[in-house]
Image (tube, rainbow, N blue to C red; front, side, top):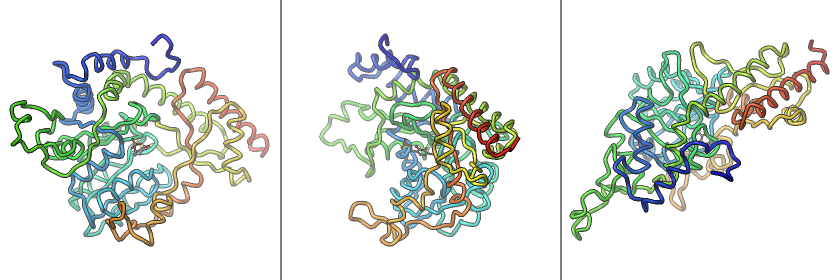
Length: 412
Ligand SMILES: Cc1ncc(COP(=O)(O)O)c(C=O)c1O
């Protein structure tokens, strides 16, 4: 690692990659890198099974497929989330139903989930965005009442906890994470699911592993018994499926990253808390903090807040430019609500197609009025600075930009 200039891969990444390459991709007695990553990830989440995959979109698809979501079924997702949540529903030939969000937490509103349930609803995909968990207590009550599966998308939420100290991803039927390169823990691209349900684990494994019949809930081994596997009479594939496997080299990186999860997590939380404190003590209402419910622990994938500058004639874009002028890293907006992304909007007239095959008549339904309003004013500050001095720059920039506008508009 002598020439390595970065900060993220300072653990055992290189040595694990070397292990993979020097073994010619053969597993050690401790298992393949994928197995080691799965065992470790499941253990730290107190879950029985984990299955790695090549992305956090694939993992959502795997979970919905394992729930039996198919043609004509409806899956409730938050309207304000990344399009990939909607893609996973489309990939199953099902219909995304958009639930609105709460204006204070910016997360899916359990009351609107309840309103959007129909006879066709099969599952709820909750998305713990920005690093904060949704109201799982209410959502699980609704799911139980209507006999629905619950998928927790934790792509942005690592080791956050709710009011009962439950870890994100361990409450619903399946928890799903992304290891894409902006995430808390990264393998470049990748993902993982966890569950306590053996049947779901086996289904997810098989679906992501080309339908090989000899994979199990806890093992992705394909060639288990040579005398059988090399026999011309051996039938290999149980189900039509995808190949969503995570490469061993990527799993090696993931294993090393997990060993340093406290480091990655604590840095983000520190940055998030600093931003929050600055806004709280700013004595002005240009930025409004996200409400964090009592006793919740935030994992601050980003630092989200509401921009209220329109009240003073400041545009979102002008504020961002000023923040950068004062040394800030930049500010991300929220994504368009899924129903407003061109990919889904275009499907409105034509229905959902996969290639030339029409897989659904509906592009989805459900008003997302609050989500559309919040989308226009949401700001996401970055929390993945490389070191304390970079973090300090962000603090100073935020203080300066707020002071600048406070003085300009006599808000002191
Ligand atoms: C909330 C959420 N879900 C799903 C995904 C998809 O993950 P991936 O990019 O690994 O496919 C992302 C990635 O940005 C995400 O933020």
